[in-house]
Amino acid sequence: MPTLIIGNKNYSSWSLRPWLVLRHLGLEFEEVRLSLGSPDFHTELKRYSQAGRVPVFQDDLGSIWDSLAICEFLAERHPLLWPDEPYQRAMARAYVCEMHSGFAALRAELPMNCRAQQRRVEPSQAALADIARIEQIWQQCIEHHAEEGPWLFGRFGIIDAFFAPVAIRFNGYQLGLAHNSHEYIKLHLSNPLLQEWIAAGQAESEVILREEVGA
Ligand SMILES: N[C@@H](CCC(=O)N[C@@H](CS)C(=O)NCC(=O)O)C(=O)O
Image (tube, rainbow, N blue to C red; front, top):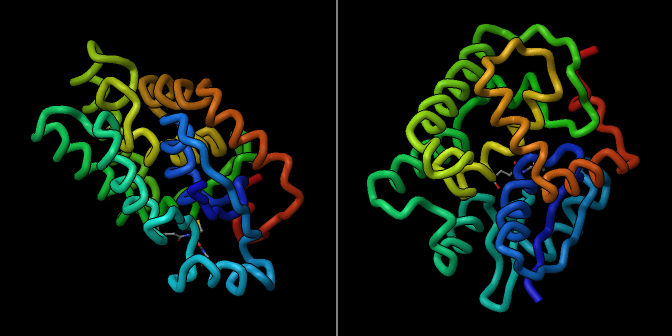
């Protein structure tokens, strides 16, 4: 049975992405949850990967220790996870790469926290610029693909899994977002799989103070 090693559901945005893709595909896998910041986290994680980060996916071929690499591995066997047409596929990948390697201010200032609901925050100019760019991406994708379905490229794909933690973040803080962004956030929050993750995150007992932001 494949295994996905994840961090706390309340806080681990990187873990959520491949988990959502695996569950969306209906694949069976064992889940191993390690508690971020606990004294045993790195010792236990070393059994699966030397990279020191979650998520890690393990099957009989070996370990994959990065959220995007895991999703790409799944897409090799499940090509519907990316758009059909090559240029659309490249665009979806470019947006996912932007998310995977960027938006540092947003990540630092507005951590994913399933328990946060519309907390008051004062984002820096850099975080506001990250938020504006994400809203622009969503707006462009939704406008172009509205006829194919409600997700960013019509049907649910890796790009939506990559922005799912952002939907949780945007719901967690008061940010004055555009109407279309709220619609896309609502779509994520009404996904039963994401609801399952959020409920499990909210039920966790650990509190990581540096991830608790806003009032
Ligand atoms: N680029 C990596 C980032 C993974 C990452 O930063 N994971 C965090 C948790 S969300 C982690 O394992 N942190 C442990 C630590 O820094 O000690 C990916 O996409 O998988």
